[in-house]
Image (cartoon, rainbow, N blue to C red; front, side):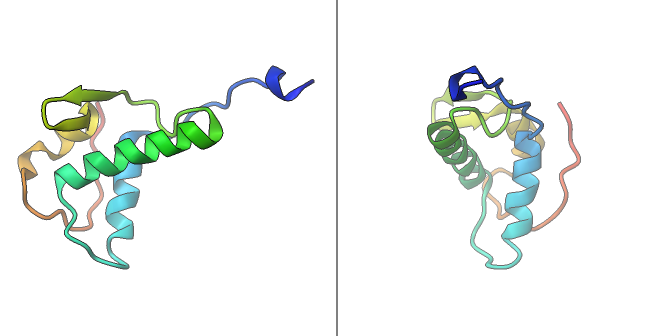
Length: 95
């Protein structure tokens, strides 16, 4: 079996899971983490992962909205927070 014949990996990560991880990592070195920053971090993480590993980091689609890239599942989970800083917590919100 050659490298090109390998099956694509099964993706189990979700954007909500990655968002939980980002919020948790913000505990160790706190920065002003907002909803908009989380959306941009998800976009860059997905792009870098696709570039290096040739498969997506999470299966949720990234959409082009007026003010930048948006993962809709995370948008709806965090939309009530608007521009306030997001403290470490666990988002157990599903689509």
